[in-house]
Image (cartoon, rainbow, N blue to C red):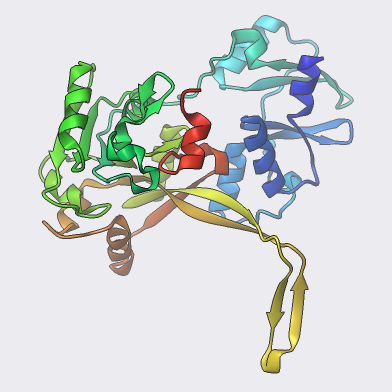
Length: 352
């Protein structure tokens, strides 16, 4: 019965739209769905399929059937379990459907049933520098940040800063630059006391320099493509996919954008001349793409950041666009972005 429920919650009908699919993935914390036409198998829909559609400006109201890939990996009743397991490992499949010649599902093998809870999430390793912006005062988490700086707030058995280290280190990154200002001594003392098998360098803002100003202190220290992350966010996404998007797109900056859904609890009115009502919408939904606080930058941009001046990452992005440079946006689903700098999100994920 438990497995039947786990399979049924992964099923979506082909005429459902992409917004519904994203919400369903977020609700069950999975990134792959079975697409059905009634009780007939139609295809597989991954979060990557939706991300590629968004990048191509496909409307989120589009039916999932419109973006399905033809080349997918599935099993037939003739395949043995050993071959199915090998295929799931090779292609990092959350599950593998077994589909007969009539298009009916005969079985669905779940990753957790065959291999346990741990899933393969790293498709490619890379070793690039990572800059973590940890100089803020954490005003949204006061009063606790009056005592404990935001980067050292606990998540399970580690701090937020350690969580970010671990996530990047899983891809092979071992060089970290941490921008500090507020309670810098405490942050440095704690991280240094851990004796982590990483190369962690701290650099201090002489005064608050904004969300990008402190990068000017890294001139001459970073000579390759690098990641930048706020210290209070967690992005549950294959970082190698973001890097691939950045490189293939020829972008100078890539912003990780999070899709957010908002429901207006009131009827909205659209008016024209002389107050005439043109359109009435009852409790409409809005979907927007927001800046998550994670970026990929090319190293030459460090030289474009002024020294000892308040300068935000938005200023840098605007400058790049004004001179004709390319800025990319890689979309992730709403629940793939955890903004731990606000109480509601932090309390969901802190130690219980």
